[in-house]
Image (cartoon, rainbow, N blue to C red; front, side, top):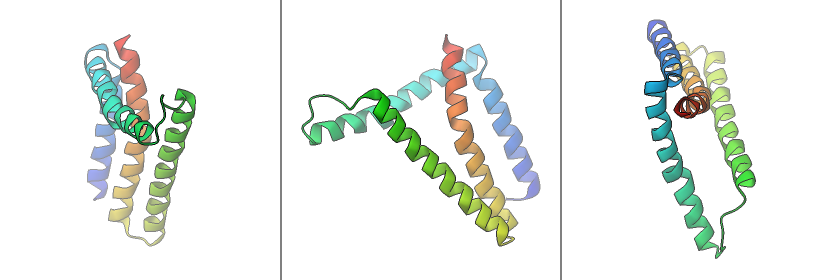
Length: 119
């Protein structure tokens, strides 16, 4: 990724973050994020709970901490990858990896802003 593409991508990401806080578009994004959360988190958790013969899902607080920890590990791994590429002076790949880290860091913020835009 060239420097120009990296800059344009970061400004585009900032625009998406800004738009997610608006009542119109942010509300639509919030609904889509809620639907995605149900399908990508709730359904697999229910399948795992059924496969281990549990009557109920694990406590929500515990599940949130486990998922948050897993997400933090993914972000740290991507950041280390970007740092190594930067240390090797492979700047195009380092910019791409750094943008991936920026997106991973922005996703929870976008979700939080858009869900609060519904209210």
